[in-house]
Length: 383
Image (tube, rainbow, N blue to C red; front, side, top):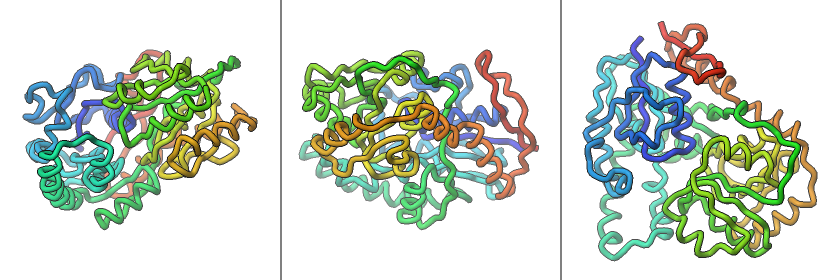
């Protein structure tokens, strides 16, 4: 079989890019496609991998302007030539599901969410500072994109969702059923530490819907130390509202993430996420999470065992949860055991079983020579 992995775009680093990385590493003889791939926005194991991009790769200042180019991504996706591929796996939170495949090919879409800012435009527009011209033009473009997105949702033969929350959204938005397979968590990257330091962490891109403002305000209000690991367009606004106990470290190395996570009091996870890998990564390091009770967090956090919840999107409610959390005891061994249920091998096994079920003749695992030194994990080949 000829296999293609198609990701929306590599223009930022997040959970979706980790999934695309793992899909390619499972099938290293496949071809990897994306509308755009910026070299400094690639997951580590994709560095040096040939990525077939669309004409959009040549658009100027893509890193700064990728949001402004949103009307063009459907055209970019439609220009990707997948005619020779027997199996296409798209990794999509926006456009990749709309790729055109050969009529007898199998197209499986791993859907991170239906396109959030299209289908939740009112919430999105309230958080952004749009001028009158954008307020007039954007609703028209959004309606056009909704029409395209509905049509694109008919392209995959099968949907896989990263959580029950997303499966429900796929059913509601596209009227398509989806098999739930949780994304892979690289638990071996994290180790528990016997050292404990007096700070909480946020591990996130700094964008509005993730509600990092709640964590910043709550920790400022309580005088709790908070380290914000990550960067994004909201950083300046967040820094302006932060008190002296909140520090912004920007994008840090993997080794620094592992260091800070393993020694923290806990992770603050204040937004409604489609799934959310961070609480499980932190659990692999033996540390608990305080999360908003919604979205994927309710599937991955066991209240009182691996974390605590708060129920209203206000700094006061999060602050109250922090104070409750600090009176509780947490078992690093139990947290680690919980994270193992979402490990990379579990993801691989479930995805391969699903592919076999839908007609892809998956053979046995073999080692992938492209794995970083001293790291072994199974990959699959198709006959």
